[in-house]
Image 1 (spheres, one colour):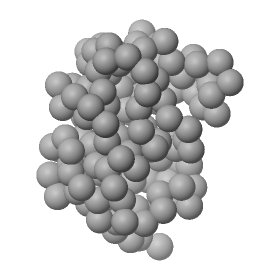
Image 2 (cartoon, helix red, strand yellow; image 1 turned 90 degrees about the vertical axis):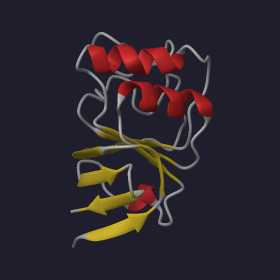
Image 3 (cartoon, helix red, strand yellow; image 1 turned 180 degrees about the vertical axis):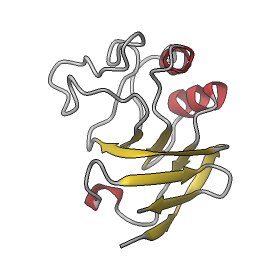
Length: 133
């Protein structure tokens, strides 16, 4: 069953991939390896999982402003998520997505956490729409 969720566009472009979600925030500085795209934060629900090519959904970012540059490094290393969905965008993740050309949407009107990991999702940062296949 396909459906669409309205959100707010933060970083322009479209990204389509398998959904990978976390109910906990993510720190890209020291929480994600920019060389591999793997979550390395100890005890994080996604520890050991790759974000490469995924539509990454999480509440919001945390940590240092250097996290924006880690997102940029992930993109340069071809290890970035193809899109990001946040409950509420904050500066670190928004800036990282924008400088890295990673489509980003926040404030989805529906609960994104009810969608199964691995479901194909397309994020349209221009319109703020999230298409779920």
